[in-house]
Length: 426
Ligand code: HEM
Image (tube, rainbow, N blue to C red; front, side, top):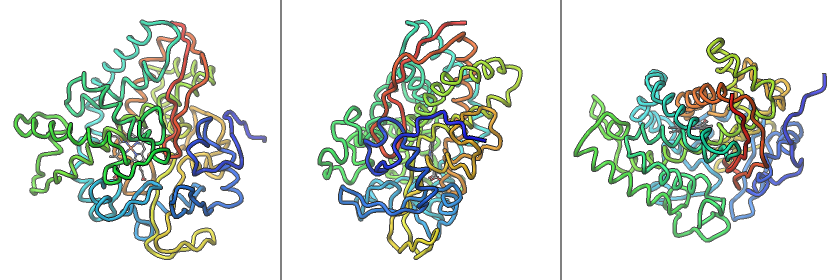
């Protein structure tokens, strides 16, 4: 049977290190060629980086994720090479190995557990309903990112942190500057295009992180004086055995939440809306299943996560000499695991370029897999996606694309900055 291809596969000879290679969409054809012909390939970097191994097959990605004793996260998790004091100052929980990582994760994980997230469901639903109603009250053609996908994660994060609603847009703008640190639209200091050496000691080499540090300090002061039941208060409180985040750990975790917790969910919602518009029969089926077959929304959310795979890669560093697919990887080599390639690996996903809300099983790696760093916000992100589409779809009789999307300039985060849509109300 021939494969159904429902996504633009892009160039087959793209430079996967170049942020501009992603501005027209992911170069899926390049990743497919790599998976087939050179699954663990060596890439030089043009910005002074020492080069890296690109791991593109699903099975190999799981292997690297699982083998923390050979592939360490504790020397940085993006392509950027950060050393000494700079690294220690800006290090977040993604950049530790067990057992230090285990301690850190234990201190922050409770508010993100499945149980706690289920307790927020009603709050998320009310927020989603407001977002949808506000968007649909305006003109029938609008930017889905600005009016919908940006709004729900922003309002939910504000609720979780217990900060004023009015601070939301500012927090999001700062978060955009961090994860969009290669895109001149999101930052005045795009890494690689301007000199960012003076910011090498702060997360994402971005001055936006300094603003977030100050904001986090102010919030911490207020919560120490007036504790509440929000996530900031809980992160600052010692556990029953007296363990506590240090001030620096707290601030770096705060920065991670504002970046990792916002943009990724927004970009996934946008990828989902675009895919549903491009598959109207699946949009209609999903809409008609709401209230009758909750299982279909669950599998649709997983397919949207796979289809979007917004965090395109993370890096590890070899701390042992290892062989992978016949390649000799040496201690100190950077090893980059490409989630965006693994999620379209035909050996794991039949017809990978076919969007299918019924796809089961769907063991995608959009949140990581087999790694101690498995996304902490996975349950929250899933819940936001589910509730958003449950609130939105029944209100639409039709939805169309009203223009081309604008994509983020990044080799790290795959996202649409704007998605013009035209809707008719049910
Ligand atoms: C659809 C949305 C999201 C995607 C695609 C995503 C993706 C990821 C990925 C790929 C990882 C690393 C996995 C690994 O290395 O194996 C990760 C880790 C993480 N994510 Fe998410 N994420 C999303 C939403 C969120 C949200 C909503 C939050 C918090 C509110 C969050 C917080 C975190 C944190 C704190 C980590 C680090 C966990 C650790 O080091 O133990 N993420 N995420």
